[in-house]
Length: 185
Ligand code: K1U
Ligand code: ZN
Image: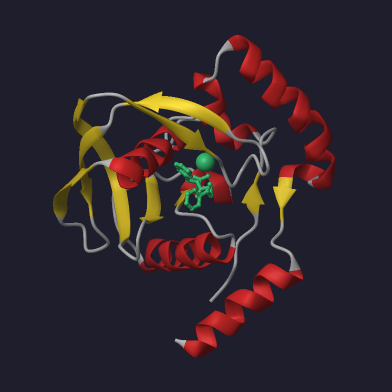
């Protein structure tokens, strides 16, 4: 098991389009496992490939102990509107209210390459949309009003000094807590 470094705002990979996955290789399966481990260690509910420096179109989510891998995901329908606070593992300590469709249906491939659909509301709907945005180079701060976005970016100007090279390496405490949890399971 490996914990991966997380790329933070400023790394151009977070703004790039991803490439669809054509073949689910052993290497992709290992990447997915490492992404779940990294997401759990960082206490996130989602993680997209660009956040760990990869350009494949895939992400993992885990809301209320329901781990889901989405490969080449697409939103096939979206309804309603809901506003709630979001954070991002690639913009630590910055938060903002984002309005998004309240309900979505997402079509994707699972880790075996089988097509499936998931219908989601509440936090899962928000998380799926946040992760699919990452796969198209979009970040939650892009939805903020001009003033709130400017405030978030100003705060980030100071925060980013903690992440030389735009890399967030999980702290020894985060890694140790993760290993401890792993042993208990
Ligand atoms: O992609 C990411 O950066 C992960 C991000 C996903 C996300 C959080 C909140 C709303 C939508 C999507 C996070 O997991 S940040 C951690 C966090 O803010 C959170 C953790 C548990 C519950 C709710 C939020
Ligand atoms: Zn994010």
